[in-house]
Length: 308
Image 1: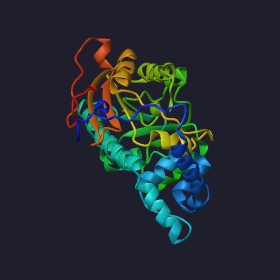
Image 2 (image 1 turned 90 degrees about the vertical axis):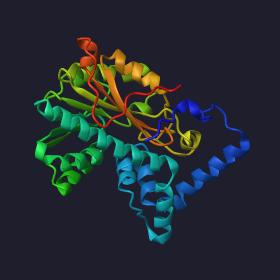
Image 3 (image 1 turned 45 degrees about the vertical axis):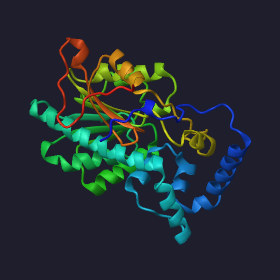
């Protein structure tokens, strides 16, 4: 685990409004290649069809198996899957699963039911694999997403992995009222790879407040953040999101997302990050701001470290 922070990088956390011509020409050429030869790659094809930020796209990245039409397509897919950003995404997955296991064990040790909700799960591979390894603790999960295709893919994956006690539900991760009425009442909530896609902090806060209202007392929140990204402009100029628009990500300093989490009524208790500091996985607990008690540290999760 690295404690490198976003402030140690010179890369921007935003996309400049204009791109100088030589670099713009590179982006145009790369977009052309990905739209033609690139479609031989399974991952690139999924990205153009569903959005490169979609749950289906991330599931392909998580599996990390090069697939495509012809050997050339598989080669393109291997290059695509090996990009720096996707490597960091897979590290984030590992950190999510490690964190989830630690939190589930804590909830079990406290003698409370293990009810999990992921508010933007996609197919939910990282959750299903973690639950599969902890089936003896009898956790249950509600995995939500807006995409019917992602939900159906998740149901098939759950059946393939033999994971029971999981429901897939279509829902809006930013609808505060709906999140406040989750059933069964979750003891653990996950918001992974979600707030990085939304520039408006008000929407993020609505989502966090909904989770705080819907989560059990002393419930845990696992959330991710992206303080910076080495390919931010390339992604925005070349790739499209699930709505067919340029995929413009919102990089936030860690202190900013932690502040929103705190404002919603959670107290942060730990964080993991990859060696480049591209993605973070944090844990917060509702009890930190409701009764003034200091949140208990989760074993195996390092304490929060803010950008310097």
